[in-house]
Each structure stands twice: as C-alpha cells, then as structure tokens.
Amino acid sequence: MNIRRKSPEEKVYYYMKKEGLNPEEKKDLYYQLTILDWPYMMDCYGKDFTDRIVDRISEELVYDIESISHIIQLYNNVYGVYTLEFARLITRSYIRDKISFMKGLNQVKDEAINIVYAFRLNNVFPDNNIEKDMEEIKNSPLLTKEEKERAYNFFHMYKTICST
Image 1 (cartoon, rainbow, N blue to C red):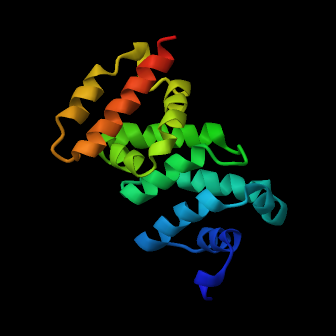
Image 2: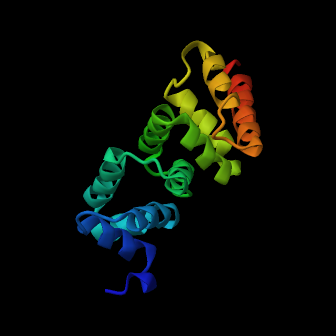
C-alpha cells in the first residue's frame, strides 16, 4: 500500500490497524490527526473507532518534540472534538517532561493561549503555584533562549488568566 497518496482519514485508519508503528509512522500519525476531518472519520468508521484513536494516543508515552507539537495542536482542532481528552493528554505530556513539552510548544507558538486553558481545566498548577516550574525552565541548559522566552510568556499568560 502506498500510504503517501492516501487521505488523512485513510492514513489514520491504516496506522490504527497496523501493529507496532515505527517512530516515523508514529510522527506521521500525530500529524495526520491534526488535519483529520473528525466528523468524516466518524461517518466512515463510526464513533467507536474515533474513540479508539483517542484511547490509543492517550496510552502512548510521547517524548518526540514534533509529536508533542502535534498533540498540542489537537486540543484546538477546528471540529471541537475530544477537547477534554486532548487537554488531559497535553497536561500529562507536560508533567512527564516539561523541557520537551516547552520545545514542542515553541514549534506551535500560537497555541500557547489555548494550552493555558487546558492547563487551567486540568488544574496543573494548584493554587497558581508555578514558580518552581518557571525556575526549572529558566535554568535548563537544554532550552534555547527563544524556548525559554516562549515558556516565560506561557507562564505569564497562565498567571494573568488564572489569577482572575
């Protein structure tokens, strides 16, 4: 099967049926999910199938920066589907690896404001106590100056929005 010439829906279906995706296939799966026509997918394969997609990606441990950026984009999908599930997935990604998450967020800068709401929804920072995380990010030798600035802006947005 020549997967390159298939629609996002066909690619996602193929990846969901395949056992043991290699790293490139996993990256492509996450990308395809960002451009997927979710209602069309539900019409073609049923809501149970799209539920299985979300369940499967929710079980994955994602450390790849590009895939993290795609997961971030899923929260603000144009169809508004599975936003609660994607918010949980995003916050778990952050909690698991803050540095990789910030690198991924830096690739999709415009999504930062949406992720603030996902974090608020999932109470990532109880009592708005984000100082420890801000310090960890600020002192990380693994982040570039640009990534640290993006993280600072993200935390500042969070504090501004969530303190009201």
